[in-house]
Length: 191
Image 1 (cartoon, helix red, strand yellow):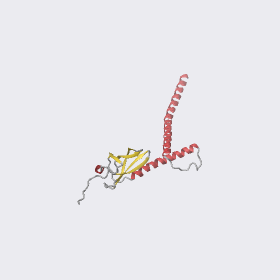
Image 2: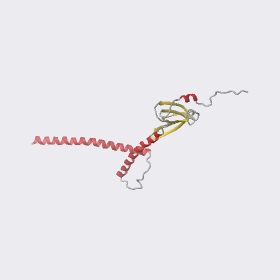
Image 3: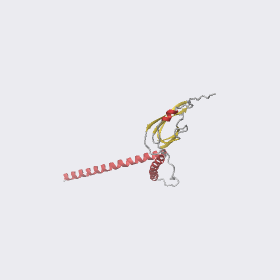
Image 4: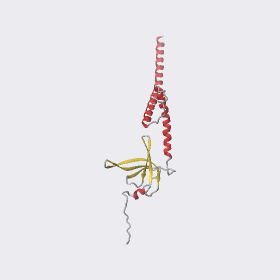
């Protein structure tokens, strides 16, 4: 009895097509994943920077994609041969000197920390202006993203007001000078 060798495909995914995808860390990709909602399947795109690819082309191969949504970094790890992935689009190729770009997480956090430091200072200034002096009320709390947005908006509006006042101030001074000159001229004419 001879055993027959079958060449049937056991996966609903076209493995050869996925294997030919040539993307690496640093590339920007859009991953279309299938999501089951109320009995219907819909496609959802997740677009971001590929941080790493692991396990080469073997069946357990994965890749990590990171994007920043509403100021918050979101990472997803996708299996390369998952049947829940409809397609993978390579949007932008880039040249990197590393295979794993995990340092990007810390870089983004540092930028956010700098922004938060400046925002917390302005929040304290606002509390002082409002007359809040109780130490219990002024305790350091975690600033939620909505509070950060509100604070940055108020800081921006305050900065705009200050800038417009600075611009208006020289104009008012010029108007006063012109008025003074006009009054001096009229006094000279009267004399």
